[in-house]
Length: 98
Image (tube, rainbow, N blue to C red; front, top):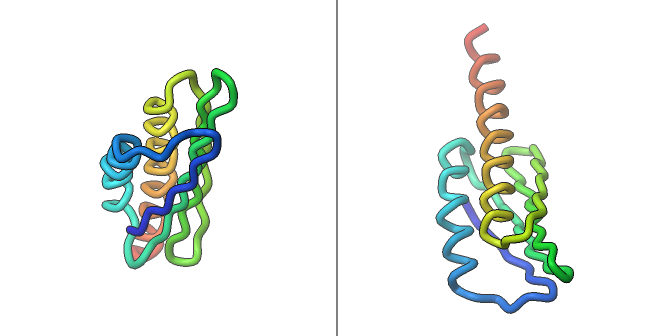
C-alpha cells in the first residue's frame, strides 16, 4: 500500500510519518491488490485533524478524525479506515460464496 502525506500548518516529522505507517500497516491486510492512501494532517489552533482517502479496487474509502492530540487523530482515522476496509473485504468475499 502506498501512503502519501500532506501536512498543513504543522512540520513534517519522521515520528508522525512512522506512526502513521505503523497504524496503516493493519489496513493493508484487508485490501487486496494495489492501493493508494492519502493522509492529510492539519493543525488549527488546538485542534489536530487527520483525514484519509483510500483508493483500492475501484472503491474509495474516506475517514476523518479530530482530537486534541495528533497521534490519537491518526489512530482514530486508521481504525475507521480499517473497519471500512474490513467490511468491504467481507462483502466481496461473501458474494463469492453465493
